[in-house]
Image (cartoon, rainbow, N blue to C red):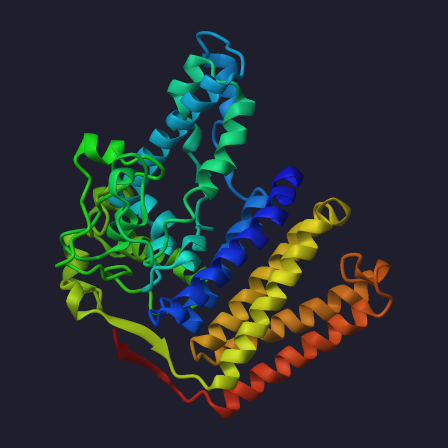
Length: 424
């Protein structure tokens, strides 16, 4: 995991530069695709995913190395052709996994966060899951293991394959001619994120569009059908942690409420959105969008000052994350779990405030008193005093200030229900 942390130290600034470039371009051409709170939510989601990944909080049922050692029919050297073939194998596995995420209830819960933004920009590419409890990805690489593709090749290709999916999350790049037949393009991926009935569950390819064309899941973007983004059941929150588990919560409730004992066990692998008949009648779900053109984008009423404060909290979140990555080895386990928990509570607190919920005070208080307790108990903030003797004192000042500001916003501008919907 320490190697992955070092890779992220390079990747994160690169992604941020591209995000700023896209924002500035949108401003220059007067076609802005960013909204303040939506962007904060997207970037916060990316941080939660990063923390979960580097802490290894996903149970790996079977690793690729084990399959390679027990299933390989031959062993081959890592040549350029092996890397290329392995890349294609990883991409096909990604297509299958993506298809499963869109067609099975349980796996949709792992993927819904990526589709939850009602905008489409580079920031929404960073909306990645923290609700993956069991990693089944290695099973999809059985053909590669049997062919003897070396584990080090797969380990190298994995992050590269993921990072190459970043660039096409934009509305500013038109169709790319012949490239539309060779690689997945922004036009194709706009279709994938759209909830229009013409586009729903299409274009599952990640790098190559061949799989969609081969298996009948390809759909070209049509000028007469503008893409409308989001999910058919809007998440209606800026909190990425809540978004990750909303669908799972619905499944758990349905499994509990239904009188059909078979459905209690089969609901998880039923088609996405399937619910037991008795539950549909007794516990209807409100807000599902049947006609994409009737979408009303989620928005919350907030002052300019609250927007500025939320951006300041996001910047601090990145500072906290970078400190964690730089000092990954020195912090060490199990203290890294405590640090990660702090980041999750921190993100939960300020995104709950963005939602206009007074619950933010409670979560912020947990963050404040928990952080101060840790500093007083350990005498330091995860080694910060080694770089600045007053570092821990400054951290405590921030924690108290953050709580006071949250209380201030709650008393000053958050009514009982200031959430409102604005037309898309």
